[in-house]
Length: 457
Ligand code: S3P
Image (cartoon, rainbow, N blue to C red):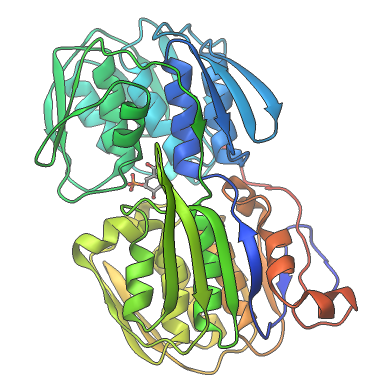
């Protein structure tokens, strides 16, 4: 193993193949919703395979601060005793860390409570757009003060009696949709939200799971004020977005063979599979269970990929996978065009700028566009030194590209990986050349990193 000079630097060596069978940690989106919905519900819910990543722990701590009693049976099993819709004010401002999902979903819950709350986050979260939730929540009657014209965090929320509204979302956003549906639980009358294209539908599925199905008419989703969620056990499937790193690595590396078990296969999340199949990837999907959420097994075999176009309605279903799809594009023969992906500019970092800069550092020709990029695949890759820009998905995408490069690569500021995939480095060791690593050789070896040192604002 190579040495680690800085506890947030990840050094990745090239690998000859991705091989093995693995299970991903719990899904991040579903884990957030599990603690928030079960915390609001009446009765007790046992949540298994909860993701103990930093982001979801922020939602968990927040729900505890608002009165839910949450027992940690072990790091991934929770017993949530819900408050039956009756939250109490938190004693202190709520730290949402790096988590846009925590801040946006909790804002919806808090907008209609008879007390004041403050939500804050780290530097990245404090520069992400909150106006998209402030505007409709204000229309519902809430009082929310953000910073400056863009309404950045910290958010000061003075809960008020809310009234239901009909709202057309200006962009497909599951966070915004969920924020408004949660606020709708506490509003007078009916709240109706319509998305321009379908974003992930975990909220719709989990409202139904917690015995509070939404009324659906075309794209419009409606919730009646006063609707109660009822506690129920929930198994969180493995996170497809975490699996995506290994799916791309195995699909693009000839000689690889990978099996992912108990992975979430919700069709509003698995657009990456369709894209990879179009690129010539060899992937077999078997759905084994379809309780609250579908999950099953994926088998991936490596081969040469070819370039493709990714855009339009497909974007919402690959939104978190676009950084790793940019890596797939770099490894494919020919050109890949990514368009209609301007939302990427307001994620944990500007993911278009970050990936364009990092791909270039590895030797990939990239043209950056306002809403995406054009990537020329197949260029020889050299190990590079790149930064994560504090974004977990940029760090992990670059770690995968490093497996295909000549010589070692160094990725700096990788503590952010703990927000969504705390065991990423162990899994990298497991799936790459383990024997070589155990012998202390350089092939396939990685160095672990310390915890996040994200700047707090
Ligand atoms: C999420 C929705 C997505 C995604 C984020 C998690 C969610 O954001 O990027 O990582 O759990 O609802 P959008 O609000 O853009 O859909």
